[in-house]
Image (cartoon, rainbow, N blue to C red):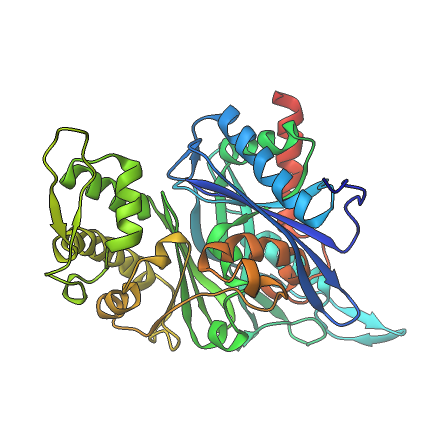
Length: 423
């Protein structure tokens, strides 16, 4: 066994993705000289401590998290001390809001410059924009500027250094239930891991899968997990809508188990091997045997019959996703359509069905931009966890021009304070 003789260095980033059926951990090393990122270690562990994004068994989660961490640490030869963690579930809420301030006069090199916008002005208008009334049990996870407006000039991405009398910010807030964040934090703290921040899952999945052109011209990331489906809609470089649907790939497995009267484990195997998202693209003549106990009659089912169950559930899910995309604050169609990530994206012929339902172009979001990924993590399943490792280096993409303390850090400081008070 290789000793873990390397502590977590400055350029080592760790992501922990806690899904409804698996926990994944990724360790990468970034090179600030050339901007490259290399995958060092990857670990995963199956578990059942989460349901629809909500923690239901903390001990099982801690045990599975420990297994995933050890596997990644062994591969990378690095001892994990801190990490970025994902969060999802129906406790996540997204909302668009806005605020405006009068710009103060400032000076540059002792020469008065009337109404020049500073980073402090941007910070003030963001603080005002997010000053909405939230329930006591909720906190702001992300503050994501969509655009700034200076007087009558709109669609400004970075207003610092420009002149004007009035500065308005339009932003997208992602909020989270405080207890949900606190319980996830406890799992990591029990293992001696410092959580540097929490990131909404589909937002993390966008980092290794989307290009800047896609975010600018319009695209939706749909992350189909086991228990939930997370949606983030981008347009003009900003997040226009985010949502979580309490339906995921496990619902297909459950349907197969009930219809065919088999176990969940066997249903999952059959789904991965024989199911198609479009029944018309499956064979009516290819039959397969259903699992049977000794002495029972062997039953056969065709791929087509199985896929009819699957297609019905996937159409329902995609219709719900389509309604959420329609709630985004944009007037035109998404130029780049929909990008599918997560384990649910592995279902055969899913792109074809999604294209019919969404009436948009659809592709699978394979992670890119990290060396070594092709060998072990080239699946859309790893988009979330790899995106988490990129978060710290690319967080400024969501909040350009702001040098004030980041909202994610502010939110996490509060959570850590509550954590200490209650635990």
